[in-house]
Image 1: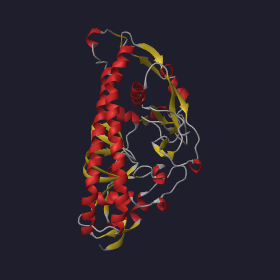
Image 2: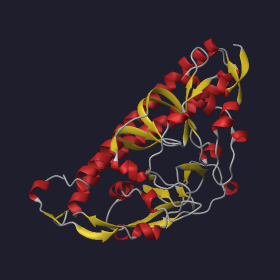
Image 3: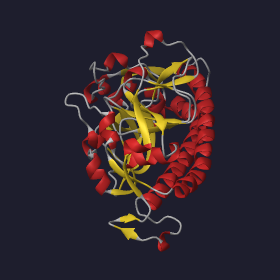
Image 4: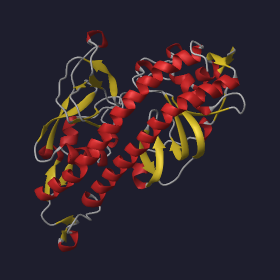
Length: 365
């Protein structure tokens, strides 16, 4: 296998000029079947698409550019929309492949090209000029073929997870937003709300609490996930909260609500549910997601979500038997998602051990 040094712009074409950001309010009015991507993942679904085909999305900003707790690049295909928090690239024909580009970005340390302290950013200018030692095209194809077997299984599990999550989301909307719950034909609608549903505030249903400090220097390696506002921010050997539970962003990134099936440590940039009063974790998850919490930003320079503002949001409490029925339908879905997540963790570890050896030539392809 032969290698040569190339700048990233010699390997790919950029399509950042096509991306368009949509606010939370705009997306709410434009709900549909097409994936809407942010820096790291799908954050919503909208009624149209900007891209049709296979591309590599690379995070432009966010703490994950530094922590690398999740891949910063992802291979995406089909019809989808992308906001202005991810670069969109496609491999140049006969020079590289999209899958290899995805490997290349995720297997290299790009910290030296990331700017910004409060908000890390990988600009297009810096990304274009990053130099990589790149194997010849035939070797890239061979690496692509081998690693793609792992990625196929991982992506298949992700698609199954997306379908499961979407089915649960739609069930919540069908019952608690559109009011087409079992037996709805026999329930009167009074002032726009089904009879028997009680008006209340979010704080009557559960209590949000600020997370806990845990500097990186104080973390001891373990298997307890540490959650920030956007997801896992490392691991520790102790937990602060017993799962299952929920976290959402308190400062920095707002709007994402994460379900956690096991024990965890929420950081002080997140809010977590300290007490479930009249609803369980299943209903609370979709209620919070449906509220579009990013619209309650109370900060100026740094987006901030005040838990008291969330507690004061007016909502309705459905009858207890309906809540129990909803949970009975949702819990098996959560169990399937947990199983698929565990499979992907094992597949990813195996792939990530093999990939650097292939890229460096330590293992011939």
